Amino acid sequence: DSGVTQTPKHLITATGQRVTLRCSPRSGDLSVYWYQQSLDQGLQFLIQYYNGEERAKGNILERFSAQQFPDLHSELNLSSLELGDSALYFCASSVEGGYSSYNEQFFGPGTRLTVL
Amino acid sequence: GDSVTQMEGPVTLSEEAFLTINCTYTATGYPSLFWYVQYPGEGLQLLLKATKADDKGSNKGFEATYRKETTSFHLEKGSVQVSDSAVYFCALSDHYGGSQGNLIFGKGTKLSVKP
Image (cartoon, each protein chain N blue to C red):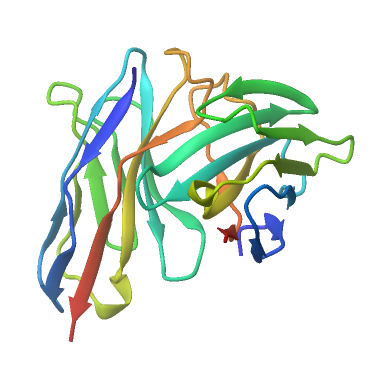
């Protein structure tokens, strides 16, 4: 158990809908990262938050957004869903925000999103 | 931009065989290198890491050495077990190359170990 929790575990929805994925980082970790794992694209970094502020953006679509709340949990919002958004979405957390020489990230179990 | 290339699988081995999974990288800064493992139905777990050239990471019998001259970080294990069956991901985190510490992953290599 990494200490990172994600809910829900599975999500099935229809095209055009909007969903919210939730992540609670390990106790004491200030940084949250979101990754998407799909068969064709592999594991891709989406976005990072550090202590409530956006720190870095990767290959995140404009239809997707995220935020980190004062209690440090994070939510990833996916809207106008398309079939191609079906994937496993992972959250990871780390103590620091990446400006050190080493940045170990601890991964949650993931949320499997299926868009029908 | 930064990238990681690892050998494509699947790799099927018999128990007690020697394992090598090749990984090479491209980075503009001074990356840290990682191997993560994903067991069926689970999230990713850090297997081992190396933060500078010539460092050797090791854990659970797995080893990998950070080779800057060949930009490689190959994963090895002398004697695999059935319980090692999983998907292995090579990754880098480039702290000065603009990626702000996020991980860049290879496509993963699925390992199956037969008894």
